[in-house]
Length: 502
Length: 132
Image (cartoon, rainbow over all chains, first blue to last red):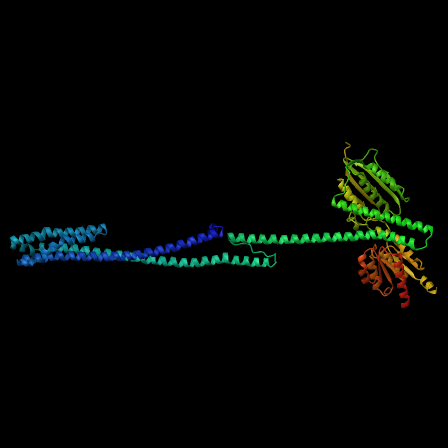
């Protein structure tokens, strides 16, 4: 595992290192092979050289033997012609010695032994062969005595012994060298072949590694891209691989992820657009429906008045209905416009100092005369309740809440209206003893066209009052809410930040 | 005049949540001398219909409690009201097909002409009488 951790992280790094290692291995194997061939060549050269040295040595020995033969023939017979081998050998000897010494000079030891051999030849010639021939010329008997003596024979034998010794050493040296060279060459060939086989195996392994780490992931990426292009955006590759391959799969997966999430976003956006289109078209239908109901009364009773015979009392009654429904239509149109402007954020509102206390008081007085069944109980502090805002819009909120309190307590009762200031908050609450709001409707009560069970009780309204009131209160930086239970009345309240009277 | 005496006995159930419109329907059909029953919401309309077996039902669609379509389907589902003529009145002008599918004989869009409603009622009650 340590080995793998030391490998380069990137695929290209690994490829470079792998190729370099393989090239080095093949180069070393070839180097070893070249070394083996060179060694063999060298051995052959040495062998040839050894043979040449031996030949020169034998030639040298033949000259020495010629020397001895001529010497013996001349001395023993006294015939001058028999001295010919001696004469020619003496003439040839210096040149042959030079050739021999030149050849036998590969090692210091050989050189030393060759010199020793030449020295012993020279000693034989100067101490024996030349003096004996000189003596034979003047006193043949003495020379003959010398030649047949044991010493004469031993002189030659000594030289021949040196020759034999030199030749045997030379051949032993040649054999040792040859076998050593042969062994080295064999080993080198074995090493080179092993190296080449190992290289071949490694190259195959490297090829497999390349196929596994490049070709297969590349095919998987290609297949994934095809699936992706075919529309299957959930396509993901199995993460992994080495270096660049891992980066490639990761980048591919990120791309697929982005594609999928952007398609999802587009679909969600489409869905939202569709929903908002639907909501808009529903709103238009609702508005049309809400307008048609009072319009049906206006047109219907107008037709009755025009086409039928009616009494004076009936005429008064129907005209009253027509007027009330026309007012209702006008109020509805105003509410629709208010909602539209509030939603578009272009409802213009004043930023004046307003006493909420007097707004509450005025509105309560307006409503007090309208319903004889209800008692309006107002509780306000003696000091003003100052806020910054639009007095008409705040009056609209109070009127909406008062109107609801009266409308949704059809059997009458007390409506308690209270205003107070706590720290920097001004709170107005309106409590009725009416029908209350069923739990299932409480969540949506500030929505548009939510009218509870109002229609069942013949309670009129656009279903927009609370939606408008909430928008107006929020536009003043306040909040609005309620507490209610079915059959036990409701308390609606709103809070506004107080203004410092500067 | 005997025909008028006979139709005067007919009962009309007005199922409509708006008080003024209930009055208007009554006025539109009033000269025919029908007897009127009124219901302001779906459940009470159904209950009244079952109890009194009216000869004609004028039904609003946007009713509290149960919608007019719901009431109509329920009535048409049983044997008692299979042939009772029903006039649907609605401010939802696109509901005529849904009303016909639920079994309405006529669809009158709000706002309506009182004479149009009257003519529809007379026609349906005449047919009804012939069928008897």
